[in-house]
Length: 377
Image 1 (cartoon, helix red, strand yellow):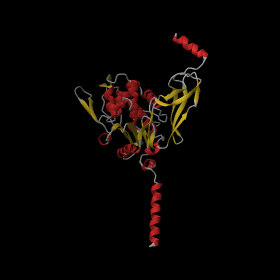
Image 2 (tube, one colour):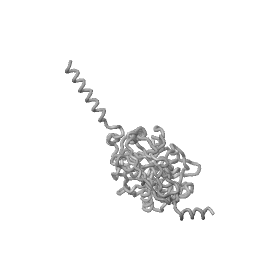
Image 3 (cartoon, one colour):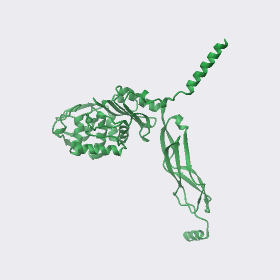
Image 4 (tube, helix red, strand yellow):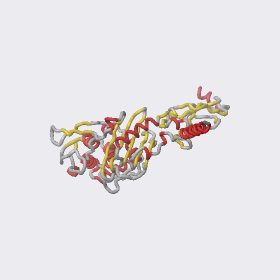
């Protein structure tokens, strides 16, 4: 009987040990989250990586290339409804097609829909020739577009994503580019469209387009973005979602079950993370003592606000550091910098903002009093 009690006691201790040292859900290794060769999930405002796996590996990305193509067109075209004549070099491009005909007339906007929904390689090529006259020049523009987004580990050799030497990106780069692209309302409108129609090659006919992104129909809050597949790249998907007041972008490259795993990653991100206001805009900090001033103290404040995605457990580990003197000598001018506020998660600096004086304080003294009298007179 005594031996049984000891056995039960040891079992309870062992179970308590397992519970107390269980890895929190949000710290699960990325390899268990996805079968993708490369993966990255970010919150778009902060660009914080929520989950990542081989996110800086340079890999082929298939038709997710067209995200960069679309953003490049939007950044370099003033009239999306301008009718253009199709260059014969854009006719008969291999792979997925909207079957453009030589010299047919169509708008830039219609080509964007034809490129992003059914993934028309000919539409992407036609847009490149219209914007830059030749493919190498357009690829240079694509490179600039990526760099503006903070994506420096990508290289583009074509506008459609067919396999080609030196045509690659990273999951992290593609996430950053997509986050920037979604700030463009026209881009967002296009990639959230489930189906539409554009004019056909002959007058009175139409092309009926259907978006290949299944998550638009199955995931609440999904706002796009683009599918892709080639032999080298495998199955690729860039998806995005808006819930709980923040937006996430998920990139999976070379991933068999790309829809299922992207769905799970996006749902998980909203279960694990919340977006917290860590510093409201125009936050009053505290008063500083003013030496030899007509007022004994001056209020201080910060201007910029700061929001950031955190797990609830991380929120308890935030540290606020106020770098402020205990006093300041008069005269004090309004809106001068007197210190800084820093917000840390453990030892990692998340945000830094200057601290300003809220008002001016004059100095006590004979000359100051004379100036006051003259000013009032």
